[in-house]
Image (cartoon, rainbow, N blue to C red):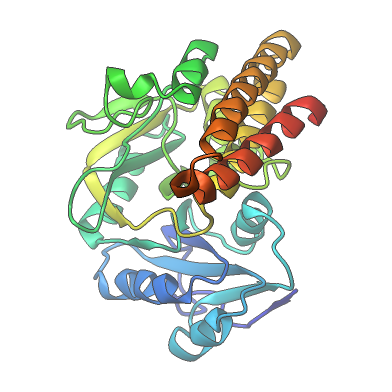
Amino acid sequence: MTMNDHASLAPANSTTPDFSVVIVCLNNKQYLEPCLRSLYDAGLKHRFDVVVTDNGSTDGAQAMVREKFPDVQLIQNDHNVGLSRACNQGIRATCGRYVLLLNDDTLVNAASLDALVDFLDAHPHAGAAGGRLLNPDGTVQSCYNNFSTLTEEFLIATQLGEWLRPGYPAVMEDHKLRQVGWITSACLLVRRAAFDQIGLLDEEFFIYGDEADLQYRLKQAGLPVYYVPTATTIHYGGRSMNRWRRRKMVYRGKMLFYKKNYGALQTGILRLMLGVLSVLKLNAWGIAFLVPRWRDRAWKEINSNLEVVRLCWKLA
């Protein structure tokens, strides 16, 4: 791993930045460049620095950052070390009063980021704050979630939750400032003192589950997370992996979260439930495989659910 010498947007004799932006990138140059441009062109009133941790990109993302954004601190990993570890590398390399965890496929604006900083300044008891995520066409993505329950996981895995409300279990649209369970880390501002108190992201989570675990620890430490609806971020989303590969990683994150925070009994029930449901799906897609026009989709579903069954069996 190497690091360039440009540590901050601020001059060397200036005070500590108000917040530090931590972005993890893996072969996403086409989104990373406009993301960084939106930060620099936003006209923020608060001072910030930026670090990009690259997890071994081969699409020229590293060269692009060096050439077009020389003030960005670049951390280069020679392979994909996982989202949590890469985020932690970025957090350790910065010194802002707050840390903005930001996805590389987002576009930000000054009003929203300034509003999040102002909110944490005005609410010293809060551990973190985030806002609404918008699709590029302006429609709303998930706003926030409560912490997982077994009933909720059953409704997700069976897709029955979608009958209750769109986007289940996340709240899709809310215009009221409120304390919540957890917010996606696509754009999440965290108090650095909170990291000092509870520790950084748990690196056992390769991807998925780490953000919920972090905010669960904030809650346990009496540092609540707030949803600030006036803060909005455009998020393209779903660019890092396809749905079939994502399923295994999401389920792994869920089971690790339960194992760490909910104990052996609930973890065992979750593993059994997800395993049984995956076996049932295997049977259904096995039948679908016999239909020529469904064959390609069925093959992907069969392999994906097999991976989940193996995961449920072996995850200690």
